[in-house]
Every structure is written in structure tokens, then in C-alpha cells.
Image 1 (cartoon, protein in one colour):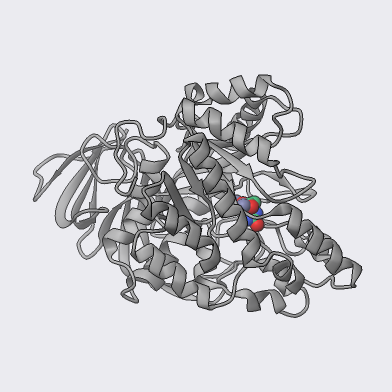
Image 2 (cartoon, rainbow, N blue to C red; image 1 turned 60 degrees about the vertical axis):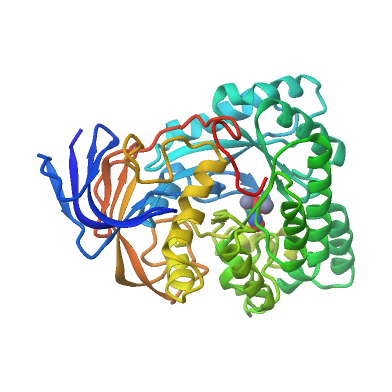
Length: 468
Ligand code: URP
Ligand code: ZN
Ligand code: ZN
């Protein structure tokens, strides 16, 4: 493998900010130091640029059957989009089908990365949907042996992948004992289903009703319930895609009390508000993701929570459905629009533009919430930092590079971009996955397969967590 010397860059980690050279060798960060006098096959001049740990996106849905269709990015196209945005590891949701064993579900997801080799490293969470066979509980306990140390439960999507409270609680009990982190999609799916049926019966079929039938209190209630159950089961909990102040409140309370509770928000809640659901000519369908975009005042609440460390991670929840033929399934009925939006490629640059450049976040916070914290929480040893012996997942980032986000130039297979027309400053000029140069100056310079499955450590292995 080619050795690379990255010279003269400004290294930014979650804790540090300094100038040094970095040598990548045999897939690892081999040396860090001032003016390194070493031979290398390739030298990258990083003067004036940041040298960052490859970002980690632990909330993606690639090639996932959902809403009567399948997300349109496979592991090759989805991770191609990821690496172009500086993300070198993802953790994707392997969803158990009804009646399916968990090993079978995992085998299905492994087949996807064999058939469509990834550019970025890939881990899996298992989304449990059916525990009716008691054998599933033993399978749950055995997941960490297969490198899967987080389990997802959907408290919404009734009639599809939603679980009841018994399943939620039993899963938490097993996870708490076996070293897995439980993740919840927290919305009260029963109440939402009633509201959807009532809206449709009254002839309210347009995209705005996606938001109106999922009010903040449904997210807040489920968040509180999940936190209470996790406490009862003595299980660490991670709340995905927190979208509003009402749902943040129980997270903040629990953390202040020292509970083992963590939470993320996602790009779309920081930059889009509920008005996008009103866009005419079915354009609102592009923003039909769940929880829905919220009233604008929530954005400042989320920014503040990120700054104060109440929310520790910003993920993408990349769940791409093409507008022309997939979102169109719900043209006459908002409840049939497959829920989800894109974001894997733009997450890091958007947070640099609207977090760092506005002064809301420091560079260290930016790296922490896009790389270090997700790697630490989800057991990705060797990732999320620039440290000797760590994986050579490294991004050279030009803070001044200007780019206007557009579906026409993105790498995902989706046919729209939620941030179309927004100009961002700062982007990767070189992206390495375990030492292999994958992206250089906007060009893909590697073949699919630079990424591979990564087994993750049990929750908390060898780490301490500040608030808990
Ligand atoms: O709308 C969304 N977020 N779709 C993906 C599935 C989920 O809820 O995370
Ligand atoms: Zn969700
Ligand atoms: Zn999701």
C-alpha cells in the first residue's frame, strides 16, 4: 500500500488544534510530528488546510426496503456520496423482517456490501421488529460476538416496523446485560396512526399533513417512555433524530440526573423548518422524513443543545427515495410517501458552514459531533481521531473551498437535494480510507471496495462518559 505524507496541515481533533505532518502507512496513522523527515510514495501539501479524522455517520439507511419501496442508494453509491463529503465510516441499519432470525437479517446486510462494495467502512446496527419467537432473545444477546453492538427499535411506523412496549423493554433488558447500546426512534406510533386516519378521512391528503399528524408531543412522549424503560432495564440509550425542544427536554433532564442517555440530531432539523412541507406541486414530499421538519424556533434550541453537549452527535439519517418515482407513491395520500431524505454527502460541510463559520460551534466541537463522539459511543476503535496507531481515515479539508450544493453534482443516486442552491465554504481536497486515497480534488480516485465491514466493540469498552 502507498505511504502518504501529509505535510504542513492544521490538525483538528475533538481536543486539539496544532500544525504537524502526518504519515499514513499500512492503513494506519504511523507518525505525527513537526517537519517529519521521512520517505513516502506520495506527499500531500496541506498548508492552509485542516487535517481531520474521517467523519463517522452512524445513521444511514442504504438499500433498505421501506414504505413499499427500497432506498435508492446501495452501499456503493451511498458510500461514494459519503466519502465525497468527508465521511469515511458509516453504521447502517440492518432491519429484521417479520419472522426473520437476527443472524439471517445480518446475512442479508452482509450480502449487500458484498454485492455493492463500499468506499467507506461499514458497521451494522440491528433493527429489531419481531421478538415473537423466544429464540430471538438469545440471538440478541449474541450480536456483540458478530461485531454488532447497537440495537434499534422503532416506536413508530405502526403496521410496519413499529414495536410494542413489551418488545422495547425485553430488548433493553437483554442489551443492558450483553453490552449493546439501544437506539430508539421515539414517536408514539399509535397516536400518530389515529391522527393520520382522521386526517385522511377528512380529505386532508397533502404533504403538509405529514407534519400535522406527527406533532412534537408524540415525539416527547415516546422519548420519555424510552428513557424510563431504559432506566428500569439498566440499559444505555441513544435517542436518534431529536427534532424539537419538547423531545429534547426529557433527554436533558435524564442526562442532568446522570442517566446513561445520549442523543443526536440530524442535519435536516438544523436547516429546514416545517414550511418546506407546504411547497407546491408536491415539492413538499422531498421533506417528508420522520420526525417531520419542525417550527423554526426549534433550530436555535437544537444549536444550543449541541453547543452545551446535551446533544452529542449530528448524523444524516440518509434515507434516500427519488422524488420522481418513489416519493410519487404518495401523490394522492401523504401517508404513502416513503419517509426519508438524503444528507450523507453534505452533513460535514453544512455543519462547518452553519456551525463553525457562524461561530455557533468551535472547530473541535464540529469534529467531535461528526466523528469522535459517534466513534466512541458506537465502539469504532481506531476511528474518530488523528492519533498514532489509529486507522488512517483522514480528510484534508480546505476551509475556503466554495461549492454550491446541487443534485446535479452530487454522488448519491437520488434525484434531488434538500439543500439545493446553498453555498458552503469548506470541503475535502483529499479523503483517505485506511490509508487509501479515495477522493482527490472532487474526483473519485479509487474503485469500490476501499471500505469493509467493521466489527464494533461492546458499549463502553474501556471508555468513560462525561455525564453518566
Ligand atoms: O424519515 C425517516 N427518518 N426515514 C428513515 C427511517 C427512520 O425513521 O429513521
Ligand atoms: Zn427514525
Ligand atoms: Zn433513520
